[in-house]
Image (cartoon, rainbow, N blue to C red):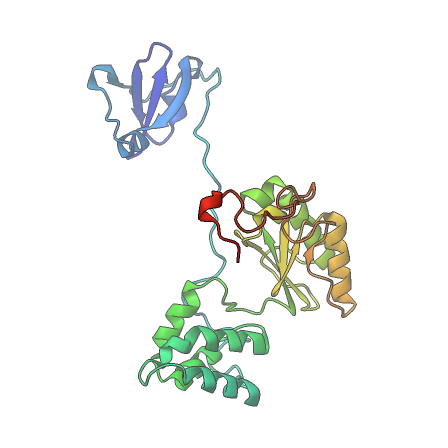
Length: 294
């Protein structure tokens, strides 16, 4: 049963339970609301001397109160179990190219006999680079080449979010929405990406060219906001940059990656502030008696 704890102005702790807490709370007296479950989790048991139970009855609802602020829940759009579809089933054609099977064989040779599964990450990466995603038939092929049970491949594919278990377009555009990028306008960047690609987040454009996803930290926080297209990072982007990047991809060219501003790599946006002087010579700061020139 859910219990709502309310601290009134006189520090009296009141608890109420029921399906509709609004029937049991006089909001004019309320200043802060906490759940009893949260208090117990934090190790703060309810003081019985200040506890009394409210019966469910009708009250006039008026006044204001402050709720606990929580982050939005995000759920993966991917199922951890496979469901056959027209494009993704055990009969979906897949074979390693001649060049890729040679690459994978060379990688497998790096591991002792019986430990071929250590090459699984490399095998899955090769599959994804060859066709752009990893269907169930490709997972079966990886299991066959590495001589391991299919379940081991399923476990790997469903654990790592980098594995695309459904087609994500010719260009997979990923928009970082973690705190640094969000503070720098990631929501506006995401909206511009959707408008430029004509594709909603989590979907694929009608022409199959673009797939748009939101991702967490991409490790380029100092260059926020950041979007990633396949393996290429585009940093310090604004709405105009996003439009130019997408239009360049549509024309069949690859736009220059890296910071889209004038700064180099991750240097401060105001310019270099350290290591701007000539370094001191050998022996700097050492007592003359301890220093012997070469």
